Image (cartoon, rainbow, N blue to C red):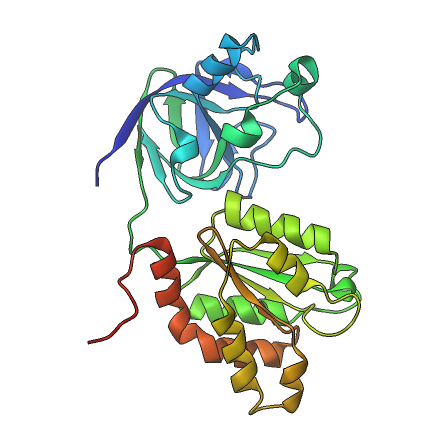
Length: 315
């Protein structure tokens, strides 16, 4: 697969959160952590932030007057357009290996550059990565990007929607069971999330996982019944770009053979861009049954959605 090559223009760190990063000549990257002495490093999926140098140049050409590190970037690179690379892209420079884990971010408290000029490009142009192999980076080193292969494992996230679970009043067993079954089927579990039954928060999280984390599959558990607080189907439909009713219909149809109360489930199945979202009921038993019905066929459907598998017709 062809490599996309660029050159590291700047390296930046900040010792405290909420402050602009400042340039340094070289940095040490630690596996599954980030840049040594950088306040944003940690055992999470946003260990390293990267930004394309031309985006900063465009911003400054409009009078932005942003210095190196002003957007919170750790690594500024000439020649690679990060925004148009998919999550899972592998970035190498010297001995260091990074894997892109997120495109853009949501800003809940604006940074110093935003307060100064009223705009910040990091939320829409920046990307984040995990450190797969550590080492030292220096300004001027070449960086290469290789896109993920078409046969890479599918990536999944599990969302549990429960007021009581979110408040810690009930132990969730449905989400962990879904993650267990997906992992056994070969999926890479990217995130497991617990949220209350609040439509706005559910919509926001579905968008983040689909658009920024670019997961292939989101399984939700809970919030599909007739209670006034059960709003998972409404939140899911609100973020959908296409409906995929057959999956939810198959779950209800096969579940009716187990319990007639399956007819009361309002779960839906949809696509948001290149991500499949499937609602499941909130019990461990129902999750196990439902995934048993649909898992054998989901992989093929997702790869059709991604454009890495052939059509469904059989000879």
